[in-house]
Amino acid sequence: MSVWAASVGGFWDPVRFSWPLMGILLIGTVVLTIGFAVWMVLQPEEPEHDTTDLVKKAAERDRAAARTVGRRQDADAGRADASEPELR
Image (cartoon, one colour):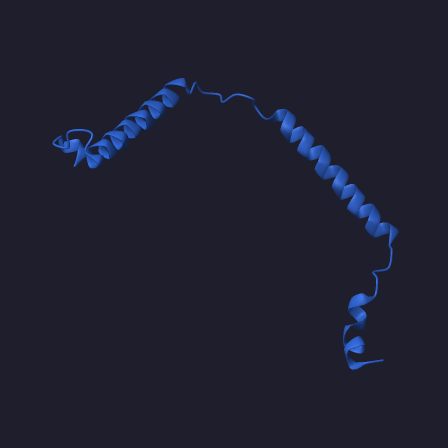
C-alpha cells in the first residue's frame, strides 16, 4: 500500500448504517416539514395596513425622478434648454 493510500484510507471508508440515526433524521425532517406547512398557512396574504397611499407616493417620486433624469439627458444632448436650475 502506498503512503498516499494509507494517509487517506479513513476518508474513503463508508459510514456505517445506523437505524437510530436514520430515525432521528427522518423525525427531524417530518417535524420541520410540518412546522413549515403550519407557518405558511398562518402567514397573512395581504398586509394588515392599507399601503395604497404609500405605493402611490413612491410611484410618483420614481416617475418624477425619471422625468428629471430624462430632462437632464435631453439638456446634455442639446435637445432641451439647460438653463433650468434643476437640470444643472
